[in-house]
Image (cartoon, rainbow, N blue to C red; front, side):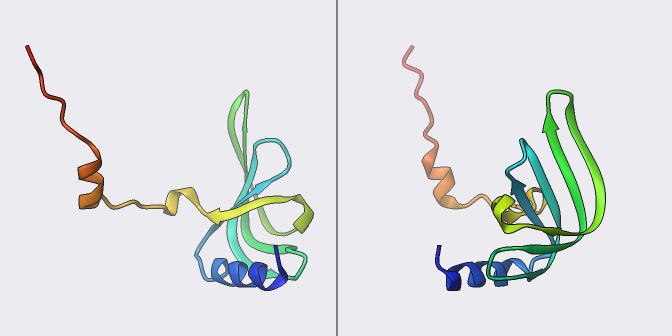
Length: 102
C-alpha cells in the first residue's frame, strides 16, 4: 500500500467515534477512538478496550490510551456495534419465493 493511501484511509478513520483494530495476536481486537497516526501506521488510540475471543469465551479489558505498532495491525475498520445495514428494495428482490407444486 502506498503512503498516500494509508494516510487517506486513516484520515477518514480518525473522524469516526470508534474504530476496531484486528491485531496479529490470536483473536485479539482493540476498539477505541483513533487520535493520531504516522506514516508507519503506528496508532494512538484513546479509551482503548482489548477484546479477546478464545476457547473460554469473550474477555475484555479497558486499557486507556495506548500506542499500537503498525507492524502488529492486520486491519482497521468500524466498530462492529456501530454498523447498521438498511434493507433496500434490491435486497428484497434477491430473495425469491418458492412455489409449492403439490
